[in-house]
Image (tube, rainbow, N blue to C red; front, side, top):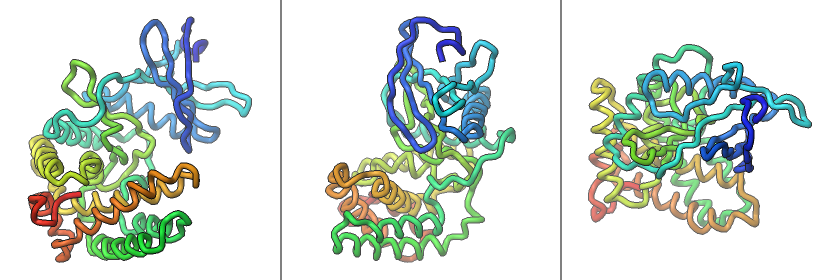
Length: 324
Protein backbone atom coordinates (compact mmCIF):
# COMPACT_ATOMS: atom_id res chain seq x y z
CA UNK A 1 0.00 0.00 0.00
CA UNK A 2 2.80 2.42 0.90
CA UNK A 3 4.49 1.90 -2.47
CA UNK A 4 1.29 2.14 -4.54
CA UNK A 5 0.38 5.46 -2.90
CA UNK A 6 3.92 6.78 -2.58
CA UNK A 7 3.73 7.07 1.21
CA UNK A 8 6.49 6.77 3.77
CA UNK A 9 6.38 6.35 7.57
CA UNK A 10 3.20 4.28 7.47
CA UNK A 11 1.92 2.19 10.38
CA UNK A 12 -0.63 -0.57 9.81
CA UNK A 13 -2.59 -2.91 12.05
CA UNK A 14 -5.09 -5.66 11.27
CA UNK A 15 -8.64 -4.87 12.43
CA UNK A 16 -10.76 -7.85 11.39
CA UNK A 17 -11.36 -10.58 8.82
CA UNK A 18 -14.62 -11.08 6.94
CA UNK A 19 -15.84 -13.50 4.32
CA UNK A 20 -14.73 -11.29 1.42
CA UNK A 21 -11.86 -9.18 2.79
CA UNK A 22 -9.41 -8.25 5.51
CA UNK A 23 -9.52 -4.76 6.98
CA UNK A 24 -6.52 -2.81 8.31
CA UNK A 25 -6.15 0.51 10.12
CA UNK A 26 -3.46 2.66 8.52
CA UNK A 27 -1.83 5.77 10.02
CA UNK A 28 0.10 8.25 7.90
CA UNK A 29 1.23 11.71 8.96
CA UNK A 30 -1.24 11.84 11.82
CA UNK A 31 -4.25 10.83 9.76
CA UNK A 32 -6.20 7.56 9.79
CA UNK A 33 -7.24 5.41 6.86
CA UNK A 34 -9.04 2.11 6.35
CA UNK A 35 -7.35 -0.38 4.03
CA UNK A 36 -9.66 -3.13 2.76
CA UNK A 37 -7.83 -6.04 1.13
CA UNK A 38 -10.20 -8.34 -0.74
CA UNK A 39 -9.71 -12.08 -0.92
CA UNK A 40 -8.67 -13.79 -4.13
CA UNK A 41 -11.52 -13.84 -6.61
CA UNK A 42 -13.23 -10.81 -5.06
CA UNK A 43 -11.95 -8.23 -7.57
CA UNK A 44 -15.47 -7.41 -8.82
CA UNK A 45 -16.59 -6.63 -5.28
CA UNK A 46 -13.68 -4.22 -4.85
CA UNK A 47 -14.47 -2.50 -8.14
CA UNK A 48 -18.15 -2.18 -7.24
CA UNK A 49 -17.51 -0.72 -3.79
CA UNK A 50 -14.94 1.82 -5.00
CA UNK A 51 -17.03 2.86 -7.99
CA UNK A 52 -20.20 3.21 -5.92
CA UNK A 53 -18.41 5.28 -3.26
CA UNK A 54 -17.13 7.67 -5.92
CA UNK A 55 -20.61 7.97 -7.43
CA UNK A 56 -22.26 8.67 -4.07
CA UNK A 57 -19.63 11.27 -3.15
CA UNK A 58 -20.27 13.02 -6.48
CA UNK A 59 -23.98 13.19 -5.57
CA UNK A 60 -23.40 14.67 -2.14
CA UNK A 61 -23.99 11.52 -0.07
CA UNK A 62 -21.84 11.08 3.02
CA UNK A 63 -19.38 8.24 2.38
CA UNK A 64 -15.76 7.57 3.26
CA UNK A 65 -13.68 9.04 0.43
CA UNK A 66 -11.67 6.54 -1.62
CA UNK A 67 -7.98 7.49 -1.80
CA UNK A 68 -6.57 6.89 -5.31
CA UNK A 69 -3.07 5.55 -5.83
CA UNK A 70 -0.28 7.44 -7.57
CA UNK A 71 -1.72 6.59 -11.01
CA UNK A 72 -5.23 7.70 -10.03
CA UNK A 73 -6.68 4.20 -9.70
CA UNK A 74 -9.26 3.60 -6.96
CA UNK A 75 -8.57 -0.15 -6.78
CA UNK A 76 -4.98 -1.33 -6.43
CA UNK A 77 -3.37 -4.77 -6.62
CA UNK A 78 -1.54 -5.98 -3.50
CA UNK A 79 1.02 -8.73 -3.99
CA UNK A 80 0.61 -11.44 -1.34
CA UNK A 81 1.81 -15.02 -0.86
CA UNK A 82 -1.52 -16.22 -2.28
CA UNK A 83 -1.35 -13.94 -5.31
CA UNK A 84 -2.55 -10.48 -6.30
CA UNK A 85 -5.42 -9.24 -4.13
CA UNK A 86 -7.56 -6.19 -4.93
CA UNK A 87 -7.41 -3.44 -2.30
CA UNK A 88 -9.20 -0.17 -1.61
CA UNK A 89 -7.96 2.63 0.67
CA UNK A 90 -10.50 5.02 2.22
CA UNK A 91 -10.41 7.78 4.79
CA UNK A 92 -11.11 6.84 8.40
CA UNK A 93 -14.30 8.56 9.57
CA UNK A 94 -13.76 9.56 13.19
CA UNK A 95 -16.81 10.46 15.21
CA UNK A 96 -19.68 8.85 17.12
CA UNK A 97 -21.69 6.09 15.51
CA UNK A 98 -25.47 5.81 15.60
CA UNK A 99 -28.02 8.47 14.72
CA UNK A 100 -27.62 11.85 16.40
CA UNK A 101 -30.88 12.97 14.80
CA UNK A 102 -33.32 10.40 13.38
CA UNK A 103 -35.23 12.92 11.30
CA UNK A 104 -32.04 14.10 9.65
CA UNK A 105 -31.01 10.49 9.19
CA UNK A 106 -34.31 9.71 7.46
CA UNK A 107 -33.69 12.53 5.00
CA UNK A 108 -30.13 11.33 4.43
CA UNK A 109 -31.32 7.77 3.69
CA UNK A 110 -33.88 9.17 1.22
CA UNK A 111 -31.11 11.18 -0.48
CA UNK A 112 -28.98 8.03 -0.54
CA UNK A 113 -31.74 6.11 -2.30
CA UNK A 114 -32.16 8.92 -4.82
CA UNK A 115 -28.44 8.81 -5.60
CA UNK A 116 -28.54 5.01 -5.85
CA UNK A 117 -31.34 5.31 -8.41
CA UNK A 118 -28.88 7.24 -10.61
CA UNK A 119 -26.20 4.56 -10.40
CA UNK A 120 -25.99 2.47 -13.57
CA UNK A 121 -22.24 1.76 -13.91
CA UNK A 122 -21.77 -1.80 -12.61
CA UNK A 123 -24.29 -4.57 -11.81
CA UNK A 124 -24.98 -5.47 -8.19
CA UNK A 125 -26.38 -8.78 -6.90
CA UNK A 126 -29.57 -9.20 -4.92
CA UNK A 127 -28.59 -8.66 -1.30
CA UNK A 128 -29.46 -11.24 1.35
CA UNK A 129 -28.69 -8.81 4.14
CA UNK A 130 -32.11 -7.24 3.81
CA UNK A 131 -33.97 -10.26 5.23
CA UNK A 132 -36.93 -8.88 3.36
CA UNK A 133 -38.37 -11.92 1.58
CA UNK A 134 -39.93 -15.20 2.69
CA UNK A 135 -37.03 -17.11 1.10
CA UNK A 136 -34.46 -15.41 3.33
CA UNK A 137 -36.64 -15.91 6.40
CA UNK A 138 -37.03 -19.58 5.52
CA UNK A 139 -33.25 -19.97 5.32
CA UNK A 140 -32.86 -18.24 8.69
CA UNK A 141 -35.42 -20.53 10.32
CA UNK A 142 -33.61 -23.57 8.91
CA UNK A 143 -30.42 -22.42 10.62
CA UNK A 144 -32.23 -21.87 13.90
CA UNK A 145 -33.83 -25.33 13.66
CA UNK A 146 -30.42 -26.92 13.07
CA UNK A 147 -28.64 -25.05 15.87
CA UNK A 148 -26.89 -27.22 18.44
CA UNK A 149 -26.79 -24.34 20.92
CA UNK A 150 -30.41 -23.41 21.52
CA UNK A 151 -32.34 -25.21 24.29
CA UNK A 152 -35.30 -27.13 22.88
CA UNK A 153 -38.05 -24.94 24.44
CA UNK A 154 -36.48 -21.72 23.16
CA UNK A 155 -35.87 -23.22 19.72
CA UNK A 156 -39.51 -24.38 19.55
CA UNK A 157 -40.80 -20.93 20.50
CA UNK A 158 -38.57 -19.20 17.96
CA UNK A 159 -39.67 -21.54 15.20
CA UNK A 160 -43.36 -21.10 16.00
CA UNK A 161 -43.06 -17.32 15.94
CA UNK A 162 -40.95 -17.50 12.81
CA UNK A 163 -43.54 -19.58 10.99
CA UNK A 164 -46.16 -16.95 11.81
CA UNK A 165 -43.88 -14.19 10.54
CA UNK A 166 -43.25 -16.21 7.39
CA UNK A 167 -46.99 -16.46 6.75
CA UNK A 168 -47.24 -12.67 7.05
CA UNK A 169 -44.22 -12.16 4.80
CA UNK A 170 -45.69 -14.52 2.22
CA UNK A 171 -48.87 -12.43 2.09
CA UNK A 172 -46.92 -9.33 1.04
CA UNK A 173 -46.77 -8.51 -2.66
CA UNK A 174 -43.04 -7.75 -2.65
CA UNK A 175 -43.19 -6.70 -6.28
CA UNK A 176 -45.33 -3.75 -5.17
CA UNK A 177 -42.81 -2.60 -2.56
CA UNK A 178 -40.33 0.16 -3.34
CA UNK A 179 -37.10 -1.57 -4.30
CA UNK A 180 -33.76 -0.79 -5.88
CA UNK A 181 -30.10 -0.61 -4.94
CA UNK A 182 -29.76 -0.38 -1.14
CA UNK A 183 -27.04 -0.40 1.50
CA UNK A 184 -28.33 -3.68 2.91
CA UNK A 185 -26.95 -3.44 6.47
CA UNK A 186 -27.55 0.12 7.60
CA UNK A 187 -27.46 -0.50 11.35
CA UNK A 188 -26.16 2.17 13.71
CA UNK A 189 -22.61 0.81 13.63
CA UNK A 190 -22.47 1.58 9.90
CA UNK A 191 -23.60 5.18 10.39
CA UNK A 192 -20.99 7.65 11.58
CA UNK A 193 -21.31 11.35 12.39
CA UNK A 194 -18.13 13.35 11.83
CA UNK A 195 -16.96 15.41 14.76
CA UNK A 196 -18.30 18.91 14.19
CA UNK A 197 -20.45 17.75 11.27
CA UNK A 198 -24.19 17.34 10.87
CA UNK A 199 -24.44 14.92 7.95
CA UNK A 200 -24.25 11.16 8.51
CA UNK A 201 -21.61 9.09 6.75
CA UNK A 202 -22.62 5.62 5.55
CA UNK A 203 -19.97 2.92 5.94
CA UNK A 204 -19.38 -0.72 4.96
CA UNK A 205 -20.97 -1.53 1.61
CA UNK A 206 -20.21 -5.25 1.74
CA UNK A 207 -23.90 -6.25 1.70
CA UNK A 208 -25.10 -3.64 -0.80
CA UNK A 209 -27.30 -4.90 -3.60
CA UNK A 210 -30.81 -4.73 -4.97
CA UNK A 211 -33.60 -5.22 -2.45
CA UNK A 212 -36.58 -3.60 -0.70
CA UNK A 213 -35.85 0.00 0.27
CA UNK A 214 -37.71 -0.39 3.57
CA UNK A 215 -34.91 -2.69 4.73
CA UNK A 216 -32.53 0.27 5.10
CA UNK A 217 -35.01 2.11 7.34
CA UNK A 218 -35.66 -1.02 9.37
CA UNK A 219 -31.95 -1.57 9.94
CA UNK A 220 -31.49 2.03 11.11
CA UNK A 221 -34.07 1.58 13.90
CA UNK A 222 -33.37 -2.09 14.64
CA UNK A 223 -31.03 -1.52 17.58
CA UNK A 224 -33.84 0.28 19.44
CA UNK A 225 -36.27 -2.61 19.14
CA UNK A 226 -36.12 -3.46 22.87
CA UNK A 227 -36.97 0.11 23.93
CA UNK A 228 -40.58 0.82 22.83
CA UNK A 229 -40.55 4.49 23.85
CA UNK A 230 -37.31 5.24 22.01
CA UNK A 231 -38.40 3.21 19.00
CA UNK A 232 -41.71 5.07 18.78
CA UNK A 233 -40.00 8.46 18.69
CA UNK A 234 -37.17 7.34 16.41
CA UNK A 235 -39.44 5.59 13.91
CA UNK A 236 -41.73 8.59 13.55
CA UNK A 237 -38.79 10.97 13.13
CA UNK A 238 -37.10 8.69 10.60
CA UNK A 239 -40.23 8.54 8.45
CA UNK A 240 -40.76 12.31 8.64
CA UNK A 241 -37.25 12.95 7.41
CA UNK A 242 -37.56 10.39 4.63
CA UNK A 243 -40.86 11.78 3.36
CA UNK A 244 -39.55 15.32 3.31
CA UNK A 245 -37.04 14.25 0.65
CA UNK A 246 -39.15 11.60 -1.08
CA UNK A 247 -42.78 12.59 -0.42
CA UNK A 248 -44.25 10.26 -3.02
CA UNK A 249 -42.75 7.06 -1.62
CA UNK A 250 -44.65 4.97 0.94
CA UNK A 251 -42.53 2.54 2.92
CA UNK A 252 -44.16 2.32 6.33
CA UNK A 253 -46.67 -0.47 5.68
CA UNK A 254 -44.04 -3.21 6.09
CA UNK A 255 -41.49 -1.40 8.27
CA UNK A 256 -42.43 -3.31 11.41
CA UNK A 257 -42.36 -6.62 9.57
CA UNK A 258 -38.89 -5.83 8.23
CA UNK A 259 -37.55 -5.22 11.73
CA UNK A 260 -38.94 -8.54 12.95
CA UNK A 261 -37.51 -10.35 9.90
CA UNK A 262 -34.14 -8.73 10.49
CA UNK A 263 -34.15 -10.15 14.02
CA UNK A 264 -34.32 -13.67 12.61
CA UNK A 265 -31.71 -13.04 9.95
CA UNK A 266 -29.34 -11.58 12.55
CA UNK A 267 -29.83 -14.47 14.98
CA UNK A 268 -29.20 -17.04 12.24
CA UNK A 269 -26.09 -15.10 11.20
CA UNK A 270 -24.76 -15.15 14.77
CA UNK A 271 -25.55 -18.84 15.16
CA UNK A 272 -23.46 -19.52 12.05
CA UNK A 273 -20.49 -17.36 12.99
CA UNK A 274 -20.00 -18.09 16.70
CA UNK A 275 -18.22 -21.13 18.06
CA UNK A 276 -19.23 -23.01 21.20
CA UNK A 277 -16.76 -20.94 23.21
CA UNK A 278 -18.02 -17.60 21.93
CA UNK A 279 -21.70 -18.38 21.88
CA UNK A 280 -22.66 -17.55 25.46
CA UNK A 281 -23.66 -13.94 24.83
CA UNK A 282 -25.77 -14.91 21.81
CA UNK A 283 -27.62 -17.58 23.76
CA UNK A 284 -28.14 -15.49 26.89
CA UNK A 285 -29.01 -12.13 25.30
CA UNK A 286 -29.81 -12.27 21.60
CA UNK A 287 -31.93 -15.42 21.18
CA UNK A 288 -34.41 -14.76 24.04
CA UNK A 289 -34.75 -11.14 22.93
CA UNK A 290 -35.54 -12.21 19.37
CA UNK A 291 -38.32 -14.44 20.69
CA UNK A 292 -39.69 -11.68 22.93
CA UNK A 293 -39.59 -9.09 20.16
CA UNK A 294 -41.25 -11.37 17.61
CA UNK A 295 -44.06 -12.02 20.07
CA UNK A 296 -44.48 -8.28 20.60
CA UNK A 297 -44.57 -7.56 16.89
CA UNK A 298 -47.14 -10.26 16.33
CA UNK A 299 -49.25 -9.56 19.40
CA UNK A 300 -52.19 -7.43 18.39
CA UNK A 301 -51.06 -7.29 14.72
CA UNK A 302 -52.30 -10.58 13.34
CA UNK A 303 -54.54 -8.99 10.71
CA UNK A 304 -51.65 -8.91 8.25
CA UNK A 305 -48.56 -6.87 7.44
CA UNK A 306 -50.59 -3.81 6.45
CA UNK A 307 -51.36 -3.34 10.16
CA UNK A 308 -47.66 -3.19 11.01
CA UNK A 309 -47.54 0.58 10.72
CA UNK A 310 -45.22 2.59 12.98
CA UNK A 311 -48.28 4.44 14.31
CA UNK A 312 -49.66 1.10 15.49
CA UNK A 313 -46.56 -0.92 16.29
CA UNK A 314 -44.67 1.97 17.85
CA UNK A 315 -47.47 2.48 20.32
CA UNK A 316 -47.37 3.12 24.03
CA UNK A 317 -45.31 0.42 25.72
CA UNK A 318 -48.01 0.02 28.34
CA UNK A 319 -50.38 -1.38 25.72
CA UNK A 320 -48.30 -4.56 25.50
CA UNK A 321 -47.80 -4.17 21.74
CA UNK A 322 -44.82 -1.88 21.79
CA UNK A 323 -42.02 -1.84 19.27
CA UNK A 324 -39.08 -4.16 19.57
